[in-house]
Length: 443
Image 1 (tube, one colour):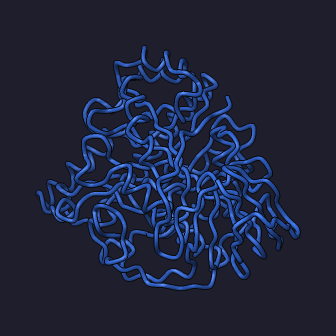
Image 2 (cartoon, helix red, strand yellow):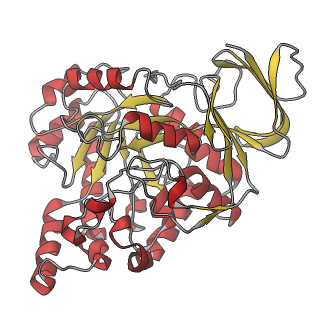
């Protein structure tokens, strides 16, 4: 591979922004900072642009195998690199479900040579696969995913005895979706009594309620403290749940939490305009909850930002409240969305990079990624912070063909993305071939 010299960039890394150069040699970063000379390198003039480590997304649903009419590993990872996401971790609720080690390795095989970004896959927990969980190698996966709330098939783990054993015996990080199913069912029954099958979408956050989230997330934290489990709670949505987590960086924490970009962006006032397009589980809740989540990101109770990218077709989304599946496609615009919070003064730029690149790398123990450091893999994103555009359906790259952000204005644009030293995206076009590699974990 040729050398690439990125000149005159604003380098955002390790809590600082400085002007300088960065040299890529093969797959890795060879030199960082100051003025670098390399006569044998391809030169990229990044004057006025910001160079950051690529975003690491700890939660996506790329739908392969089995649901590829909505998305697949190639199409969604392509959209992700266009949005500055260079590594992703994919969820197990596919068809077949990723609940055996054989199914896990089969998914790695599907990604090899086709994923535009680096990849890892979760093993899913069920009420009857604890033997598979115990067999899991520490470097075989990013973690074990447990649905402590409604899910498809047998992936709802609702047996208290099984949960206790899972939290006790899981050999890796345990990532939890926390919603209390009995509470949700009671709420749903009450709204069906009043509205029948025509429940308005605005009541989604009252059905998938704050109380349902609290009951489940507090149980998860209690179990983790009892067994000293390495617990990572996914997609927090409420102010009250923040009480369960310690402020500060994730280093040394046994219990961490994620917030998703759409829960930082939307609130319950948006259901009127966006309808089922923003139906997701857990639900987008109140403005007060959204603002508390932003504050939790600043004080470190929320350790990182993910997407929970979960595409569905427009036909599926148009089936009414109960018929429409939950989930939003987000990877193409998640990083510019987060940078909107920077523009508006809710986050500093360096803190944003900590939350989307540095913290995920440390929290999951990802080897040699997430930083602009000599010797690290060259997973890079160049961003123009002053290049506004409107999200249009014709520019959407997801297989499902739509975005919940259509019509909204974003002020930052991804100019170029590098994965393992190879430029894969530049100014609206893709360059070369998929360059993603299997993520490695040091645990």
